[in-house]
Each structure stands twice: as structure tokens, then as C-alpha cells.
Image (tube, rainbow, N blue to C red; front, side):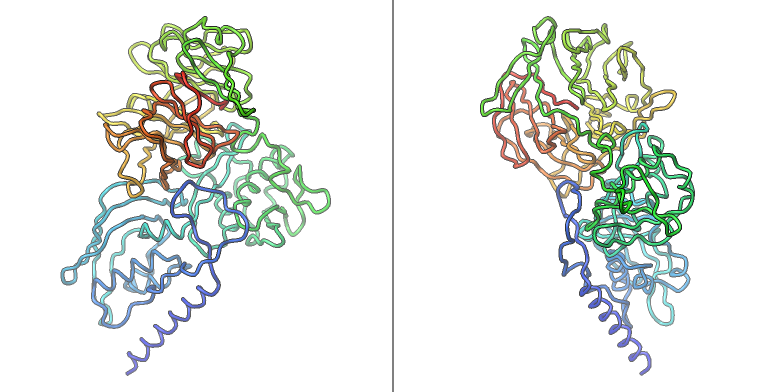
Length: 581
């Protein structure tokens, strides 16, 4: 009698807890498409809590216990108290749920006391909440024992197992910002479950430092051992951030950088417009803060710190058989004319073009992809010659020019600052042959497509600037198969914003190449549509207007899209196109 009454009270308590959480509401996350900045008021959510999440009931069989445990893990709870009830007392005391999170699809099968989860691993959140895409089989066996007459799990898997449906629906992407090359913000994407104090968790994550992958390429203006005094509160659009005394000795330059990191990180939280810093309950002044209330907003901070440079020009450059052309779209009629100087007058046969972010320099691959030249006005200098198979070059936001080509029987990577050449060390080139690359708007990450072992792969690498320049930290980006038929062939890539790429890819070697938007960690992939029979070979995206994308076809026809997925014929006769980047 006592056992039955206890079970009834336990189930009633769980139902009341579920009802209370539903009534308080929560925040949903997008299920597809690129990562977007959160803003405004959080939308209502009547389905954030799975009503099946409840403690085990007396008499549950092994499969019921495991299925209940998996449901409980897929629905965030502080300390995962419900999930722990499916474990033995010893296992519940030692289990560390947030050590890592495996995102999976699949189902359980059972044979007597043996229960197996058989499915697919689609993603991984490591201990710092950074996501990496996965595409591999997943098989987890659960050891079941009887404790006090009820089946329980004695050896739970390490960390959490979260169903892909729940992860895509409930977890939200955020960027935590660090400093690249001492002067620009670099996003470090993380994912948070619902019903957490997002502002507090984001600041704590910022204080703990960059993820293990990004850390070698960035710095932080926040001193070591800086701690958050109390939880971050948000009132009337102002986030109150109380930090320890370690920040008091910072000079104005460091204070501005620290403020930029915190403000840009917190402005993603719904309802946050400004940040008020304090130390020991006293306001803490930072440059660019309001003179009356000490608050600082993102709009008050220098624009040159932003992760996407704001000075990129919205112009187009195209390569024709007669030289480089400027494409002007400011009027109703598109006009095409030559650039000033030799590069616009067919003195050199141009193959590829790149434009600096400030729109003051052009770089051109010429002479059958054997030479690299740079121009500023009428002056043209030769940076490389006697090489072969040069790829489309690119400027970083720091006016560095990167190029990849063959020399001495192997593929090499160079960086030019002015006319000074630096050979860049990169193990990425040793692992395969690069066919396209693009530097992120912050100048710290590089997206590359390379061929290796008879297949093409998309990946991300870091650009480390110290005494020497290195490109390392190669991470393969597996596009999520569930959103498409499965991309197997990659042609070209460009950055669409701080954390999103535009990828030209195909499902088979013989199928049409089409554009897709994909997050830099592979979490979300969406089709951008396509015109028929365009035979796409190259993509360019405007940083001034990141929704403007131009596709170049093999025949020289180009198409343009402003984000509506309605591709329109643009200009003819273009071998290649570029925006200032």
C-alpha cells in the first residue's frame, strides 16, 4: 500500500512540475536555416517540455527505463534530477551530465535485460558547448540491474544523449566573442538549452575563455581569474554585469576591447540593449559609455571592432577576356566598364580577381594562373611569377593578401603585406589538395575545399598570427544529411556572415551544382534554390549586403539573388566575379 501511494505522489509531483514549467513559457530555437541573431521579445512556446518526461514508475521493464532516461536527457532540467532517477543510486551520484552531449537519431531495442540504442551520431557538444557535426553509426549498450526490486541503469554513458529532434527544436545558438589580431571580434559559437539564464551563462562562458579549437588564434581583453560577482540581471533593456576587481587596472584600450566582447555577446539575448559594468556595486567606466548612466551599447563602440567589417563597398568586379570590369548596379540599368590601369586594359590575361575590404586594391591571377599581380590605381606590381595553378586569391580585413598555388612540385600558401611575401606553414595542404578557400570576415578562420583520397571535403582552419603565420586546426565540416539528399561534391565556398557559409555543392558527381547556406560548425544546412542548367563553378557574396549572392556559370553567364531565392540573370561574359572582401 505504501509503495503504491509513493508512486502516485511521485507521478503527481512530476505532472505539477511539468505544468508549472509550461505555464512559465520558454524560448524556442530555429529548426533549420542559418544562425540568426536573436532579438526582440522571446516567442511563446507551449511545447518546450515533453509531457512524457517523468520519473520511472514501479514495474517498468528495462526498455521502458532506458526510453524514459533518454527522454529525460533530451529535455533540459537543472542537474537533470528526473534523469538521475533512472540510474542506480551509485551511478546517479557520479554521473556528470554536461561533460559532453551526443546528438543522435535512432531507437532502442531490447532482449530481456539487455537494451541497445542503435542509431546515428549527428553532432557533438563538447564541455565548452561548442558544436561539431558528426555522421557516423552510434551503438550504446545499457547495463541494467535491479535495485530495490526495480530495474535501473548501472553504467550510464558519459555525458548526455539528446535526440536530434529535441536539440534542433529547443537548443539555441549564440556567439561568444574574442579578439582576433588584437583588433576585431571573432565569434565562438555555442549552444544553450532552454530555460537557462542566458545572460549569466554567456558571460561565464566568456570569462572561461575561448573554446579549445579557437583559443590558439585569439586573445581576450578580460584578465585571467576574472569572476562574475552575481548573476546577470536584465531590467529596462540594461544588462547589469558585476565583475571582480581584476578588471580595475585595465587601460582604456583594454576596457574598450573588454566592453566590446561583453556587449556584442549579450546583445544576442532578447531584451538586452545596453550593458552596465560594475565592480563592488560601483559603476565601472569604459570608453564610449554613456556619460550619465555609464551604460554602453554596441552602436556606441567603434565599428572597426565588429566581426564583419563595415567599410566593405557594395560594388562588383568581374573578369572578362578583355580584363577586369566594374559592374555598377546603382541605377536601374546595370553598367559594365573597365577598371583603371593595366588590369582593365587587357595588358595581362586575367583569370581571377580579388578586391580589398577598403576597395583600394585589386589582386589578379594572370597568365594562365601562373602569376599574381596587385594594383592600386595605375600601378601594378608582380607578387608571384613562375608558379602554376594559382587559385582565386583573397584579402583579409587587415589588408593581407593570401594566395595558394603550386611551386617546387607541391601546393603552397603565401601571405603578402604590401609587397612583402610570407610563406605560410599549413598542414592543411599536406592532407589534401585545396581547390578553393575563403577567409572569414574577422580574418581569423579560413574555409577550404580540398580533395583527398578521391573525394572532396569542406573544412575550417585557424589563422594563427605570431612570429610566424600558420594555418592549422583543420576540422572537416560534414553537412547534415537529414536536410538534403547528402552532399558529396563541393565546388566553391564563400562567407555569408560571421558564422555562415555559402557552399556550392552537388549530391552526386553527375548532378547539378547548387548553392546552400551552412553554419560554420555544420549544424544547419538549407538550400538556396537554383536556376536550371546553370553549370555553376563559382560563388561570391557581398559583405556589405550579405544576402546578395552572385553565381558564375561555366559559360560566363551569372545569376544574382538578394536573399529571396529568386535567382535573376545578371551579366554575361564573366569568367569570375568578386566583391570587396
